[in-house]
Image (tube, rainbow, N blue to C red; front, side, top):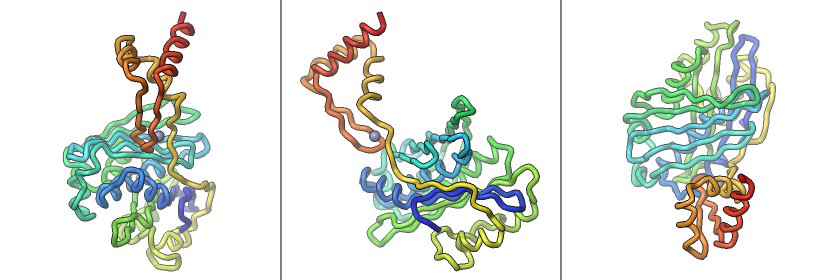
Length: 289
Ligand SMILES: [Zn+2]
């Protein structure tokens, strides 16, 4: 399959398939956040999960996760938006240090007493959030639990990840298969009852590869786009946040010659001088009156 792309397919059996390769985004997140290997694996899979859930491409659907792990990892924060961007971070990535990427360790850190909040928004819909209490399981199991609970659609999720010996993510990919209302449930079961049949990191031509699934299932490509890591932070956004703070907190910020704000998602540091802050607050007051 192609790296760093999102693809939307439909089959003659009425199965919708969304495939995302987040290899580049995963490697970038790993480098930005200096992630231990298990933490990198968990964040990569969560980003792939958000990308494949945002499958209403016609209406530019976006999906955000607040994944409360209940473990020392804290929360997993992930956004997929504009059909081809993802971003994400972990509250306490150091909790994964020294742990191998086994299904047991992934389950223990991602869903010990977990809760998943999924917010969806698109051109057609106001943002709405659904919550599911997670059973102990891997990231893909958590997503399947969400889909089974919150959506009335038969769904199958597969997430795959490869790392080199040093713990660098080299491939990250996943798919979401969903049965359409008039779809063939027997065919869906044939393909997706045993998810270990498919490995999205397998070479084209291998029996478990995506190409093999696409050929067997007669899937037609509807839409595809590049998929990359990108943040939405900006000085303008910081300004709108700071100007809504209570006056006492604004006064506190003006005590220093400058303040530094670090974006959790991309690690970018914004240094804002006191004169600039003062101007923002004054302009905001004028605007309000
Ligand atoms: Zn940012």
